[in-house]
Length: 124
Image (cartoon, rainbow, N blue to C red):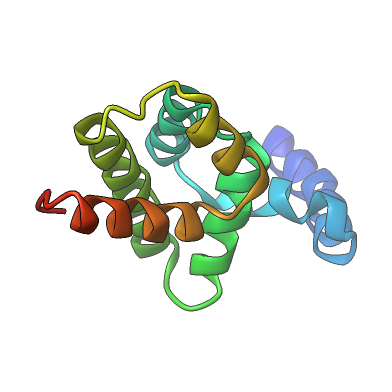
């Protein structure tokens, strides 16, 4: 019990610091996110070659409007959809997709891919 009290006392300072320091905010959100949810985001980040920071910021934008679980589900669904459309359009591992995912929001890339799919007559 003493160990638990010491841990909580120590972590209070960490949590307080993370709330105040914007650079540590992701660490704070990460503590609130489950391991499986983090794995899912990391898997699609690695598979698509999206920088982890872009995935985190997409998650954070969704987190502002909905709950944690729903935000993770929406972010993973968006990344899955990007993956599926890119596969259907044969754009996987092309420089165009890599550069766009690196420098733009995943939401914007998804919109572009959906438009390309519509133009090519693929069901998106």
